Structures are given as structure tokens and as C-alpha cells.
Length: 513
Image (cartoon, rainbow, N blue to C red; front, side):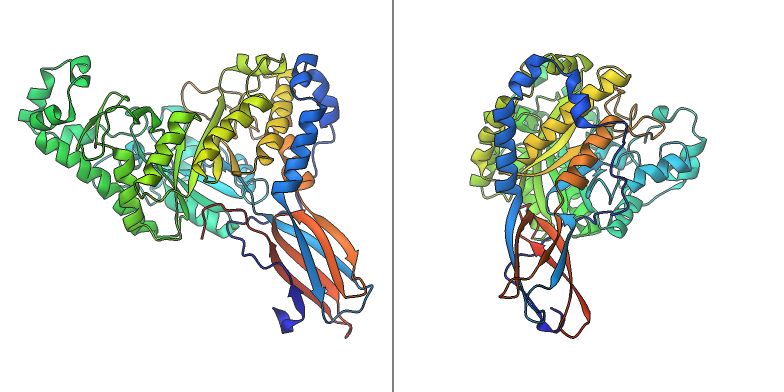
């Protein structure tokens, strides 16, 4: 501390912070929550009633704020002290899958500006299928086809094989330069469409083993035991296991703790209590392909061996049910280190959001509380790692429905004790994966802000930021209660010199060490 003059009676270190941009516009004067909320039905407000809102407010104050007591030895009683929050402890993130891919330099500039102003975390794509299109050739570094120049000239970006799959190195460096938490997604996932490379089978399964496996239909193969499959294709079984281990080892060796958090395994609860048994070398995954036996347990074990201890090792799933929670508890009982439990919420179908506005029981407060209660059994911080809220129509009414739903759900999620972060999935319209809604962004395809953007900005950069001016009391102290995060304090000392200090107000357990 500077000259030892400022005594902070709170001294918990904060990590993963984001700079609050004081230049961020306060919001669109043409949109405000009080007016927009009228678009929702009475049935909706019966679910989101005054008692619910009071509970949310109470829990936000209880779980997202902390008390501070500052003592100023070099200041006289009555000295004016300026206290400004400069970053959040809580994670507000988005995926950054369209880095330099939006077609113009201006769109890309606006896109990047969101990270470090609205978002303090960026989920970076490491999907194996496009990250390593050929064996032993991982796409860490930017090549010409990853550059802004390349994408600005592309007429049909969605037809490109690496659409939404940019090279990660430039993004990691960008995040570090902005003080943003880079987050890797995902190391292991059984999904053959988006993650599992075809070359695993093509290259590593010998001809004689392919011939044996080809005698079985997909349904017949799915009924074979791990022992029977191992007898049919022992070389391939061993090769798949080695490939999974090698992928973990390469990512850990390359990035170390430069990427401080990873989804180690994604959406694997579908295989829990299925055919994957600890000790088996292969499993008939419910994704319809052959994976290392108990690949979730195996991948976490390997990750804990090779990643630095200050890197967060996390699990992620859409299940949000008892089976997923039981899987996590089972992994913890096996001695696996899991730092954060990821949860997803996707309102992909526009009709779902119309139904929400109509008051149907979809993602109501009670439903959310029940899900979080089940997941909290694992006693881990929860990251709402992927969310999608679709504008049911691409017009003013539809966009306002999206904004009101987002505003209320973010408030609810922010109030949950075990929640450590919320990550919006696709922030630009028509930039999701095939089959995902085209109007689920916070921005139009031309990077024009929608009401949902202003709704989140109102919460994150206005309502959930603590800034105040106070005067020291007779004991030269200032007490206040504020949102958890990093603060800057400025005051005038007895000498006439202006002093400034930065301190951290409480740290919520987000898995970072």
C-alpha cells in the first residue's frame, strides 16, 4: 500500500476482473424497461410478481455485495473520499466465435469493443474437429484464411469450414490485452457432428479392424459390450485413448495458465450411467460413436495431471438435472478436480419466447430455483455458460420481448448464491450454428444494438456498479456496502496531496486461484 497510509479492513484478492469502461453510453434513450415491460402479458407478471422481485433484490444484496470498512490514517475527519468500482467479480461473458469474421472492419471493431466494456470473459472455440482438421496439425496460430482481410472478401461465410472457428492465438492475445478472461471451450466432447474428428477412425483404425466392425449395423454395434468391441478393434481402441490424452497434453503444454479456465468435458451426462464404466477402454457413446471408456473421468484425470494448478478445470452440460449432478458428485468422489459446474439455458425456438411472454411455465423463477437447487448439491460454483434468448419476431415487439426476458432472467441468475457467471452465446444475429435461431443476438447482423443489449448494459454497467462519494467519520473511517469487485479510492491527505489506491472487495469463489 502506498506509504502504508490506507488501511483496508477488507483484503481478499480478486482475479478474473474486467475494466469498467466509464465511456460506455448509459443506454438507448428510446428504450427503457418500464415502457418495454408493458408488452408482456398479465400471466407473465403473475409469475414474475412483486414478491419474486423482492426476493431477487434481497438475494442480490445478500450474495453479490459485501461490506467494506476503509481507514485513512493520513486524512482528517470529514475528508471527502471518492469510491469507484472499476471491475466486477462476477463473470459476464459471451462467446467470441466470430472474431474478425463479420465482413467489415467496422463491424469487427464494434464486436471487439464489447469485450472489456459489457463482457469481462470470452469463450474461445477449441472444437477438436475444426481445431485439428488434420492429425498433428492443430490450428493455434492465425493463417491467411483466419485474417480479417480474408473474411471481408468472403461472399458466403457460412459455407467456409472454419466459420465460427477462428484460430485461438490472436483471440487469447486480444483478451489478455483487454484484461478479459479467456475461456477455452471445449477439450473433450462426444458429439461427432461438431467435435469428434473423422480422421480418428480413418487414420487409426487398421483395415482388418474396419472390416470386422463393418459387419455390424450401427444398432448392433451399439449393443456390444466394451469387452466385445475391444476384441474386435484393439488397435483402434488403444489409439482413440491415446489421441484423447494427447489433445489434453498439447493444450496444457501450449497455453499453460495463459488460458486460465477450460470446459474440460462438454455435455457428457448423456453417457453417465450408460455404457461408460471406469476401467473400460472403450464405450458405445449415446452420441453414436466409439469413445474412450468413461472418457469424462479419464479426461479430468489427465487434465489435472498436466494443467497448472491455477487453471480452472470445469465441466459443462445442458442437462441441469439430477443425473448431471450425480455425475459431478461421482467424479468428485473419484478424486477428480472440478472447479466449476457449467449449466446451459437455450430458448432456441422463437415460439418458446412467445410462450414465455404469454405466461407459460418456461424458465419461470420457480423452475430456475429448482434447477439451481439440484445443481447446488455438488457444492461447486455454477457458471451459466451458454444462454440463448431469441427475439420471437424481428420487429420492435419481438425485440422488446427478448429484452424483457433477458432483463428478468439475468436479475434472477445474478441473485442465485452459487452462481459465479453468465455467458451469452451468440451476440450477433444470424451468426449461430446451423439450426440455431437467427434473431438471438444482442446485435443485428450489421452490429446495430438491439433492446436486449441496452437491457444488459443497464444491469451490468449501471445497476450493478457501486460508485459513491463519502466523508470520513471522527475515526477517519468510511464504511459502505458495495458490489463485489475491484475499486479505486481517491482522497486528499492532510499534506494537501491527493492519494489513490485500488483494493478488492470480497471474492466470490469462481475456481480461480
